[in-house]
Image (cartoon, rainbow, N blue to C red; front, side):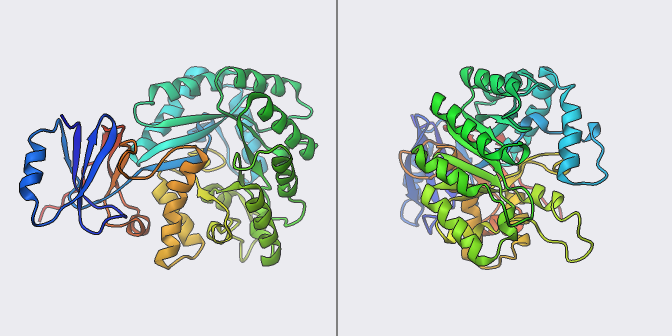
Length: 416
């Protein structure tokens, strides 16, 4: 017996509506609906365990959050925001971290994960800080979150050195411990270290030791000089880590002239390093020292995508001193980004949709294609196309992981 049919679905790869048949957790068939096959459709429905009517709405492989901090989410009530800059956000969050408990982190992270699931997110990479303030409490909590919500979302854990590494042996030991106990990859933050280059080298050393990927928070300011990209590229190539490194923020790129940006894009492409842009945080924290013509402080990811760099968009933080807004909606984040980047053309918006779907799935080593034989992980959006979904902040109506429905947001009704 067929497990599920999602009928009357609209796909990017088919002009007519289709019926998607799911069996044994995979897509068994995609059949276009035409005027000559209604009887066949009815016959199929008689032998199916469940039917979902997409009612002509757009179906995709779901969204992938490539850069988020679940451990620091939802702590606005514990932080004071007066300056609104990066230094204050780090200081206020550092104070709050000292009181984090495993139960507290689990509760707050679960709240955000449930937001994300209901917004259509099916894959996610969370950074988890392991240092003298939190030790392993946050890490243990996020492992529990990963297991609890595995029915709906794939969660990847990045053991992360937020506040330096070269002069913090405790952080180094805790990173080793996290990698030994289930962390999926290692992350570093060179701009917060007294020796950024050595920090980068130490993170790569740990990555090689455990055979895991690398993700850096990089170049988070609006000074075009002193970028760490060349050093990360050098280490990536020397260690054979092409395709296994991501960098987030990198707002220095937004301050560079066109030629310098092009040179950096060439380096990133050469090393096959993915670029993650974080619109909400980058806009909120940057440019605070300007009184007029305040810079956007956000990289135009489309420009780098056009030069062959894998680019994604992500949330970074939800409801804390770094990002005091958020609902874990990647569609909303993409819409915000497209406005800030002043995009208008359909092909530009199509590229933006890819940044929260297939491009981000590539970073997480997950599949996002809707095709025969693929895992039946699907999301129904209240839109007709990918571009319409971004332009209208489309609602995620329903989601499925491996053929099992994971959430339902019934479309609003108007009563005349």
